Length: 278
Image 1 (tube, rainbow, N blue to C red):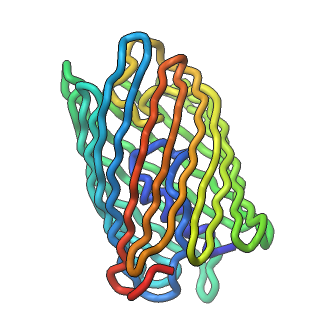
Image 2: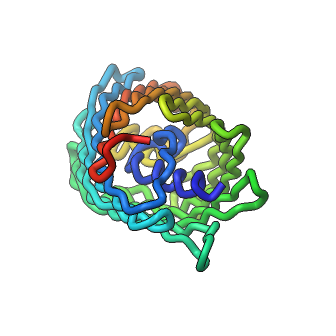
């Protein structure tokens, strides 16, 4: 289960600023030094009573595994939707606890930058720290604390996740997020399944509850509609390796109090030090 725990961190690093429920599926880490370049691009549409707005963006992230227990990452992301746009830099890290066979992982990530809503500039600051630890041989617990300060939205998002290895290839995750302090007004539950084999990967899931727009990566959008909106979300992704690369196509659909938000993301992971993706 230890490899899958670290894999969840890698998935979080690859998702960058996207909705946390629809992050890419995990890629099992190697046991030796490894370097990966993760490049992604996305197109999105936001439609409601006010019409349809389009946007998109991209990110580049370097992941460096010094061994099976230590990963560092650095990168940048740009995102635009309607008249709003923002750019952030990302730093992340994961470290195993213990001497010979550390099972518990501590991870952290920071996204810092800024943008403009089309009316005024704003600061973008998101930071998180979490721990992944075994509960049983087939089940792990993830506890995370996330701080969001984006434009006029701010607050803390503690998260509790239960991650279970249902079969050797199937990972099931259930999570719950409840905002504390600030004005995020978030109560969000989610469930997802990740299937991972040597030649094929798939992810599917759903989420529901109440969120602030910034929590689902809509900085500067849906202003004036209230600090907490209802959310119904579903996502599906498929991927496979090609030589030294791994490709993932992920579709995410959200209904946010009647406003429809659709995102299509393509992620390419290039293994810089190994001849073929695992």
